[in-house]
Image (tube, rainbow, N blue to C red):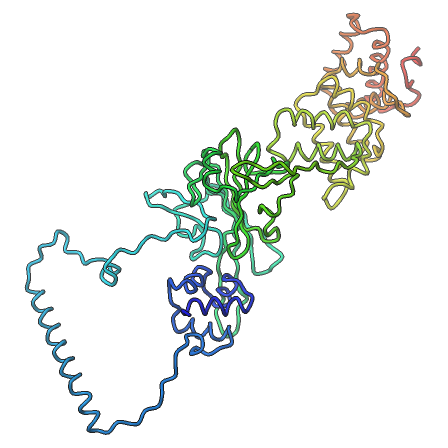
Length: 524
């Protein structure tokens, strides 16, 4: 058994990974990997440290046999033994000295007279450039024309890890639950790098150790390829040919993703823990690549873990849908539907125009049925009001409103939970849509809607109550209503609501709503 095989055997018996063993010794995971594959040999300091970690002697680790004791040779035997050796050594020294003197007197006929590289002197051949040791790497041609790459895992150097990459935006640094580790997000234009910096707590007997691990690599730029030659712009057929049935076919994700896509493929393998490459595919071509160490998710994206609902195994180069199952349909309340639609619109960059339209429609049409207190409880914010005011703000910041959307906002003025500070915020929304389209705001008040409370009166009162804070917009809206009313473009019912609206706008300016009618039928 070789030394590398023994190191690997002892490490596995301890139940530790190459990365953890390297961390204990103060070396990289790549160094441990080279020892175990006999690509390199640990020096004496590392041998001693390895033996200490494994609880064995250096002799046991290296399987060095103990030398048998021999009798001390006599002076005569020693002289007879050493004399021939001295003669040979003297001859070699004289020959080397003569060779050096001869070469110094020879003319220099080489073009540059430069000595050969040290590697060439010692090995007789050039040392090959470093190459990735796993499939979880991105390879590209650097600015100097040389091939460069980054690979997931522990790095020999610190950011930018020996490459010519440069930041194109300020690096984001986040604290973690581990006091000695920080999480870093580095945008280098073509490549986005997520890495962690770990620093050991100083120990009395040793210096602080510090190293960095690349946790994820992402790119949407052509020319940054995996070791199997797949890059953004590669065809789906090339991807399937390169990775075959080891891929897992995944339906389009609903949350935030690297790039818009129709579906994506995942390829996982164990390399000191499971890592996964995600190939996002749009219209038959790879539109983005992301690779990351999975940590808690482990082997989630492997063929054996296909759920046949969202993830499917491959068979003969095609997704195998033969065991497809439909997801369980849970009963979703109207408030929950509003929450889902709102979160999709503000967080999901991978929505089609049809999907955005459908989610926007859900929000507006379900406003009258929304339980605003329940909506706040669905969020992840520390305070429920944060989620409520976020939706209120989103509703007010829309560039345009359709006639139908204005109607559902008006009808939502009496929804459950609209009181106190929430009512004031909703009044701001009512005045916003009133100023946007005063005429249709009035016409909507003639529509019927099954409601226990008078939403018409509440929408008029709310719009007037908040609108007084915007005198220029209020003046323009009043002029529009008076012009439309005098031109006869309103029906008799619409004219009644228009006069009531104008009455409330005047009351708002006087800050006195006392004794006002609640409907056009009460007007004089």
